[in-house]
Amino acid sequence: MEYDIRDIGLSERGIKRIMWAATRMPVLNTIRQELAKSHPLRGVKIAACLHVTTETANLILTLKEGGAQIRLTASNPLSTQDDVAAALVAEYGIPVFAIKGEDRETYYKHINQALDIKPHITMDDGADLISTLHRERQDLISNVVGGTEETTTGVVRLKQMATKGVLGYPVIAVNDSYTKYLFDNRYGTGQSTIDAIMRATNILLAGKTFVVAGYGWCGRGIAWRARGMGSHVIVTETNPIRALEAVMDGFTVMPMRDAIKVADIVVTATGDINVVDVEHLKSAKDGVILANAGHFDVEINIQKLHELADKVENIKPMVDCYHLGDKRIYLLAEGRLVNLSAAEGHPAEVMDMSFANQARAVEYLLKHGDKLEKKVYKLPDEIDRDIAIRKLKVMGVEIDKLTPEQQQYLSSWEWGT
Ligand code: ADE
Image (cartoon, helix red, strand yellow):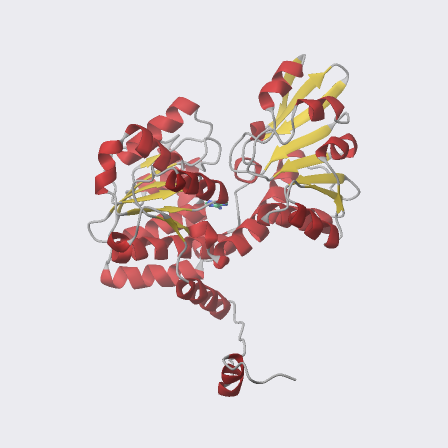
């Protein structure tokens, strides 16, 4: 079997950790049991470009139980858990191409190795695999039934491809299911970003001025969790509606130009470039900690930070100090996705729902892909609702049902005051 990982000897720890995550992913497990009975994915080849974590391993094993043949590559050069990659290869026979800390060239070489499977389905987190396939491997397009996309940044890129008429097959935006973004983006990013900052720095968050750039679902999660740790939280935004929401949620809102001058910590979660730009770097306080929670390492202008610095010193894993004269700026995880680079990504309990959506998206594409246009689709609401129902059930939470009288009231228009 072909593969490229750090060290196959790490597999034992990886197996235990994959099983630990499995106990926290009961919804995905119910889907796994269903798929194992009827093998609806038999003969289906999947190229997956996802963060190689314990949770992803459980998704891959679910698809394998369904009969699929899968190759897995990383969706970020720093997010791979090498023990998980080893376990997938050694224990479960999955060809994995991913090494934590790989350079850009290796990252794309691995994507191409995953594509060598000649996929019927592509799975992305950030759209690097599908973009490589459309740019360099166009001969593979006609074989593909459809793709799935996990994250907001990837969905934005794919919608651009569809608008420009270059998207070669339909894609399901898994990100856009309610049972994905309301939980994974908000509670997952919220908790894992704080976790990463704490693991990397061990600083006290109470009493610190914590700036969150972007008040989308990820930014909201980070801001609320930072507040919970006792930080004074400032939000920066460009969208007036989101800014208003942040104000009414009780956060201080101001431009980055002003926020940077008082910030102890800045976390970017906007999906856009140079949110912390050269003028912000120049006016930042001594000792400020910068981290990025957006998909790509573009939100902090790292090139300018390098140019401004007289010296760069690694302090400890995931913490680099940039000396700008007397001022020190600390950058976490090289400006890459901090929650997956300096911690373990979102907890299994939220990935349970995200990856239940991924598994359902694969099934949906196999059933309906030939009837879909070359566009970006959401999963149908019934599937989203079914995942919510299953999650509530495993959490032991009962809810009310509409009575026939209430249903009828909602479908009438005559009854007023
Ligand atoms: N994205 C964010 N957290 C993740 C995790 N734990 N596994 C896979 N993808 C993720």
